[in-house]
Length: 301
Image 1 (tube, rainbow, N blue to C red):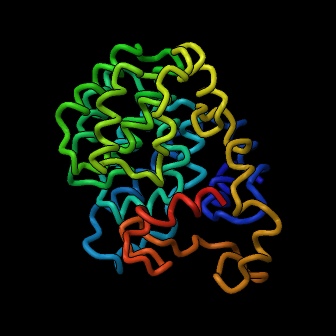
Image 2 (cartoon, rainbow, N blue to C red):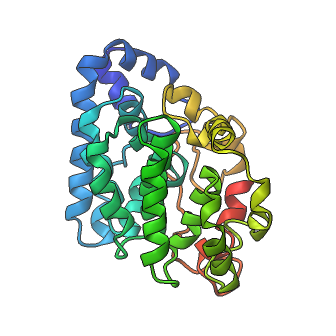
């Protein structure tokens, strides 16, 4: 298998994980990087131009391995592409990134970002025209940058304070901000966070109020950083295969568990599964949006 064949093979997300292909791409990293960038840019441009969902079908497959490899290789030129992904319309972003948005996008960005990118990240965080999970990924990437000593704690803390003082109480990003405060052990914001809970501004399915009930029990900033970096989803992308190895789609039993859902066909590759959009009605029948009902429960399974 040569490099071009390896790059062609990774366009399909199928069991088993593309370990051989990724190994070949790593061996030819310098030659592969421009091709990875071009593939991501081409598909992103097609999606940006698409005016309706039918046109999305013309995009053969959304980049997947390519996003992780660019992050693993610390390709600085990928940064504008990642930022454009976060600025997509919510439905387009969900189609293009899927679970990558909440699983790894912050780590991808943090690995290649510099302080020069902070204004662009802040613009995404403050853009109320896009989905809260996109805004949250941009904010979380700043926290990850701090955790890896690429940004000072004071810079992140000051910005979170700005958001807490300026966002509307109806802004769904507030729930994400509470999570960042807990991760950073920002006890100075405790009174404001508690007031947001009391005003029913925080999604209790996303973060429990019990985590705020005793701010004195929060870890020190140093301990918080250590604990934070131990969590897989907060770690920078250093090894694409290792990062993806626990994903359900790459488990052997997955192809047998979903025989009727077109994830696996004995005569063909696994294709991208249909997903419940975060803003669609929850299938449980509650009447709430999926993101406000069973999304977090499903992610924990």
